[in-house]
Length: 113
Length: 114
Image 1: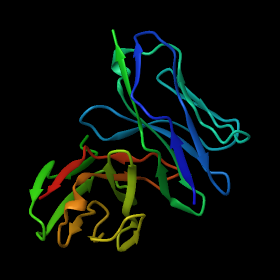
Image 2: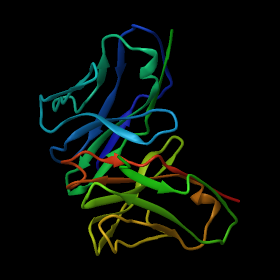
Image 3: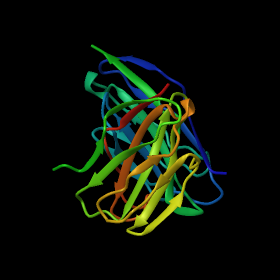
């Protein structure tokens, strides 16, 4: 079945460092891809999404490009802040059922001043 | 803006007890769902609904019941709690389907089963 694999955390960075969180997926068709973020004590919220190959989603300085050839959707940010400390989830839509999202295990990011 | 409201935020149960986790949204969303979040396993879909009167099973439905009598409410019932149901539960809603719209999550309900 469809699945998402994320790099294990925690990822620990100093403020203003470059961030990459890897995400790869397995799907039989062409799913939509998402990044959600969970700040401490809160529910998840959508960070960005891409619905077709080569689309780039972006929000709050974060970017991710839908790469069909490498089945990847890596999250990047050029300069992280302490306020970016959170857990990041990669997700894909179930091609066989548009009412389901499949989430990765999450990657915790810790940014220190 | 209330968004998605879950109650209770914390609950401790004994094995075999039953309880209901409440979820309400005030955004007139058709789609609602319940996930559980466990360490190292991400979020797993329990049940979902695409509209009032319609529910369907997700990835891990055993031990849980849902109903959708109104657009606003989507309660999750644990019939006979087991320690394996210790988890953080999230309710989420969307205007349309899960993959085309944005999922709005509640703050979560932490359940411990002793």
